Length: 361
Image 1 (spheres, helix red, strand yellow):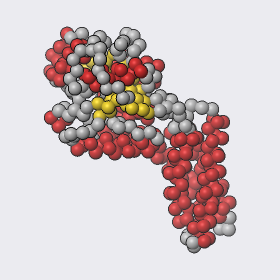
Image 2 (tube, helix red, strand yellow; image 1 turned 90 degrees about the vertical axis):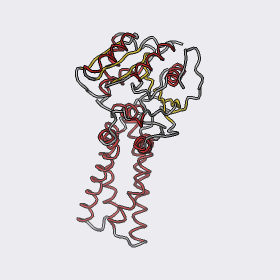
Image 3 (cartoon, helix red, strand yellow; image 1 turned 60 degrees about the vertical axis):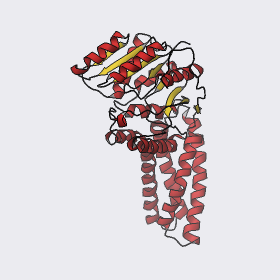
Image 4 (cartoon, one colour; image 1 turned 180 degrees about the vertical axis):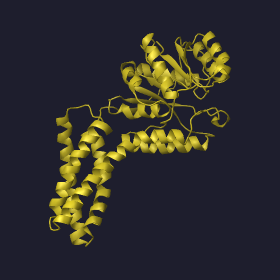
């Protein structure tokens, strides 16, 4: 098997990185690149040892973040033609076992166009910040993306050659880059393959430079664009409805329809170009979108009439209740019908490590 290149972003590494590199060399990985992300002079000996083992070294003068280090490595790999078989990214802190890295390489060979993720199973003693952080992020990601991923924070990933340009162009300088990679898969029709790997935390994961507060804010800031679009359209919708119904109180249904048409245009433009970033023609997406609008308008009109005229609720309260119930339905339909993608997520089930040297798992 032609093995992919290995890319290791490293900030203040120790002997665990050297041990990993030795194992990978023994398993037949010929192209290993290490990006020194501004670690400082006191870590030069460690990087010199990695270079002596045959690693290609790239350096940042100052610490620029994991996302930038990954993009620096991807750029260098493309320049020296190391990306032909794809690139596997692995962390320098010993969390990724060589055998698991090899399984990612196997999955890449069987799925050359897919983004391959080495996903931890979170069994055994896992630091609470990692368990809770991954659980929350995983749930939010499943909601906005439509597909669940077992481990959204994994740094063990196989990047396909044909999508290397996109990986290099993604926004994000720190840990948000890795979340952005996952969020960009669906709108760019990139399938994802999950390879179950061992969960390894050394000394409570104290060597990790992931800040659960600061970096989570950066990650969820990317996810918030999915929510803000609906909120903005809702403001437009409610504002137009309130204006019309206050001017002409008897035109309840007409006011609702006009408000929904105005907000739907705003919502369509934002969702197509900013949120889902759908690649098909505007006409195709617009036809599907306004079919959904008709369904939602009919459902909303009927609900508001029942709640206000039959049950006697205030018009404004009836609309709020209706919109809350239908908002989730609308979002799911936009995700799965209006801006649907052909990308899929599956589990890679080949757990055999063959044709290589010693594995540590």
